[in-house]
Length: 491
Image (cartoon, rainbow, N blue to C red; front, side, top):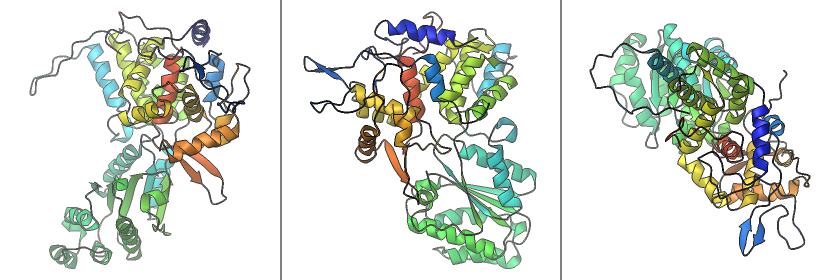
């Protein structure tokens, strides 16, 4: 299959106002138009025209299918049927599984966007990062701080490391932080879980006599009594704690544990765009702590996840749909897993083994419907419920811009989004002004400055990026309308 269906659909919809595919809002009849500057009246050129006191978007050309595909290329070579909603009675003996039920169960096990992976066999990708973490623990005897935006698979990666550690004879202890977690409560929970056989006699006595308010020196002294085996302590959701004194104490503890030679390793996880945001302004990275910044996945990696998972389920996907799903995921494996799960289930319930156009379109609509409400609210606030066509344009430019490994992009990246409607290109001055507003007033984006004073931008929530491009893809005609009899109630 080629992209002919996509180009035909776009050209057909260019002839009149777009009305979406059953879930898109009919109020907006034109695709995003990116403004270039201000006219003589001070109005942003290319923004909404005033007609009887109301904003009306300009009616102009859209990106071609080829252009849309080109926006998301990596810098590297090379309908759901009506189904009754029922729950299996607790304790009931399951009936013999039908082929359809077996495939649905496999899809739910392989593609788990709402739950992190737990075992290596259910985990695809991240080979380099997994190897780096294993090398840090095994070869360097270092602690590891793993950080990234949400949706990139930190917890799944940590789960796999923990599972493999247990298989290798490590004792593994996990702790998930909350806003109420204190340094003392953290280690009062961890220390009793350390197996007695790993602690010498003085350590057992120390554990029974821990002071009410634990300090790093107390924890380091106790850890020096751990003399047997290997222990891996996984601390998740460190970003939930906003107290810098906690972060300083934890870093001091990790350093001290290494200094006393205890066979104990910390793997610390948190949501952050850089290490300072996770550990606080005074957080230090010592020689015995390895920082792993989890990058966005490339399209090649995301496509391999799609093929790997569907192959395990005895299914496949049309090549163009695979490419489009990876592109619209914008580097987030969470989104790819979501799309595969819902598109795969739609295909199975329609009696298919191959995911095609309608199934992917259904999954994309599901994503738009179920994305984090805070992302939707931020989008509606910035675009005035899409009545402000210029801001729709700017958000699309930011979401479609070429980004680095960690989701950051420059003003030039956003201003360089190609258009084929003959209008002037977006000026960097206009983009800079709007980005400043989106960072400072709206809180949708954030600014990053390197030590060389190079400025880049990113979305505060990485889900905003795929939400914008998927929403606009649906609204402006990337898909033929689904068969209403095959998609009843899906929207």
